[in-house]
Image (cartoon, one colour):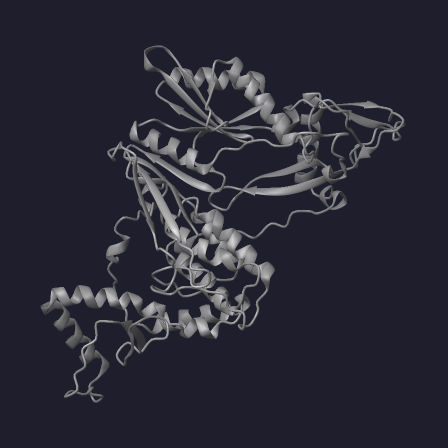
Length: 525
């Protein structure tokens, strides 16, 4: 019997693999003919499957469970050993019979890979491997490169142009806040270098509440709202567009007196003892997000937008004849859609006059999510992010499995188990959490493994690594919101009723669908 499920572990001498299956018939009067060649055995099996179609479906579905075998999982003790496991898996794949085609499991019929929605035909197996760029960590290191020097000059130019500060003497009794340079190479959805960004950041940890800052909260758009807007746009055949505010936090106006040091490399000659008094926010200040949101909110209200009472980052503007413009704000990234192109043009021109904007055109890559728009609907996925996770935790060469968790398995506290690196485990679970933005199929198992972050053991790590192995074979999966989909909001919910082994609490889950795609989901204890 299998230790992982109520099924039998069977050895197939033809394929030299172990199969886990419940559909087993014991032929006690028969025995395996070891004298037959493998080729004869394969032909016999193929002929039997062709003659019994109903049985073939059952066998094929059970064959999909062969990847659930814990042979490799027991051999992998840490994430660093996954590389050797990947080499073993590649060797076994090479030895497998050529021309063997697996049909798609029935439970994956509702999934969309998104490959057909790409604007360019990309062979994932032949992608160019770009060398990982190392960002400079100090100002002295950055100025040695012309591209980073240009990025630094561009940041100082934006600060001066925006009137962010003024040079003055430090008043008595006031303290200055230090600043530092932060450098980041931004990549596009294909992993190519998009731009090199240098940011002057204030050391906000030195601020004191009540002296140089008070309120700090600023709302951001929820992914439920963003997916709902995408579903509505797909349903009504609306195009979605994206705008980016350059140095957004520099537009926020400050109400407190804040003084910062002169940035390294740009001290005023003869006035090195002076400091800058901030008139507008600087990145790193505790109140910078709130100052920016107050600024952009005031602009939307002035332009005739109505703020949603339930979602403070959602703004709607209505015009004559049923015209509508919907805008969602996520810090400095704006997405908007509607049914009138003239409202789009007017809105973009108004934004460019008020702020320094970058028109990104149609929505393609937003907060790590790839968006494909076509006449049939809108498809979203996180293929690049999933690939980055596998590379980060050295699981890109691992053997894929067909489900994120072994059916019927319930994790529990393993106090007597061998402990693993808690920091690494938390990083792994945190990375998978953001992947659930477009992957509702991972919601349950991610919620499950996140319960053991305080004291993870080898048992919990193996469960988390199985999610990565499942991700290895399903990187292209995502959500497709169809134009011809159901226009009604449909909801499903369920609970396992005291399913937790440790405290007997229930795990509840729900999902809301619109335009044949999930827009909101949850799974929690």
